[in-house]
Image 1 (cartoon, rainbow, N blue to C red):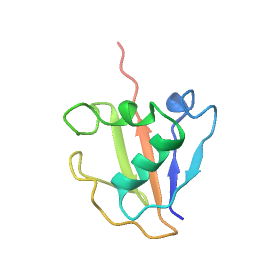
Image 2: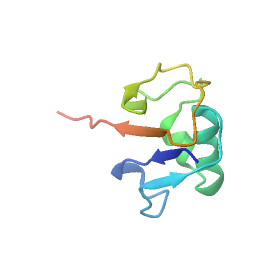
Image 3: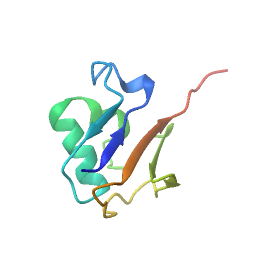
Image 4: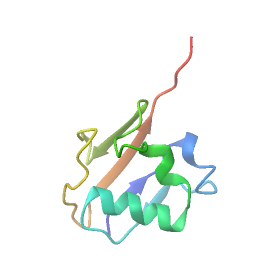
Length: 89
């Protein structure tokens, strides 16, 4: 099963869980599967227009994905990483 890595800033929604194994065939399905178990997760990652939020990056096995295309296929041993930045001044 693919694994979704949850960044520390979003572990409040996942009650401290840092990795979630999911049954999914695409990156979008991976994110949706995490949302089913941990409601509120998806809105932290994706905005209302369906794009990755400004300070979030998605990676598949270490390679950054497009901010608008999540239909990339995943294999059972793939890792989807959600990475957040910090804004401030």
